[in-house]
Image (cartoon, rainbow, N blue to C red; front, side, top):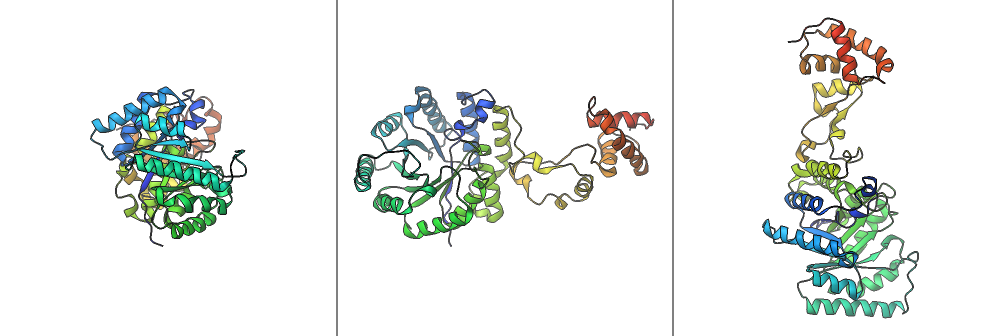
Length: 392
């Protein structure tokens, strides 16, 4: 099936701020300076669509949005979509338009689990939604409108289709959100392909939570099945287990077909991950594909192989995403090759391979005894110095 991927919609400023990681870091929300740094780097990467909270959330959110919008213009980025995540309620919509958003991400939950009680029948509800959207388009013809049936994968498909059939002519994009993260790739493929055929002229946007650990594979499957946009955040932060990682998706799309990501400056990916890590006072997670830890080697046999040929245990071109070095961790699993390399090339000792074997054997046998009072490098240096080896 032909794919029409148009890009990511970054929701770090909305979904991302709902992550418990902000509470763990005692930040609770991004500061204005945090947002400006994140925003500028996302723009440099190539992101052009950003989702924010509805302005009804707080006056501070409105103020920060207005500053970021002005910043984009000041930096020369004119074709940026600023999208307000709004209930299909007049107060949300009015406040977003008043604040200056040029796009609305409207949503309504039809799931039987939502607890929502609609006073009218589904037909009347659909008529109300159509009336709101048609009036919006009439009064604001350039306004970007996305409409989503929240919790799509647990909703009655016939009810959703009744609604989408009625409104798809009046919106730019239909959303398919996996709000609680229960979808599996086979289901995603089947439903996205079906919706793509049913609504060939409208964009499809997907939003996957990582509740089952499937957000990335679901997003990749959706793109290959015909989805146009994917909601992402930096490091995949978000409600509960988060959503699709921005850089993780770009990496996987690159490996599928470089044309998917031709509009992105990929070498900035790792720097963006490190930036958010520093804001949250945490390292880039080990589960994030674009990370230094994805080029870190512990086992001796792996360290030896990578010293001879990086591709032996590094199968992904992470250097294209800004990860420009590999890391070898000294420890009880390190072998002669790494210890020889470390002492000779990094610390400058005059030693032979045979001498390195002796040091390695002693290092492994004494490591557990000293690890509580010394780090691995210190232990190794104590042993090397005790042999009387000279430095260059």
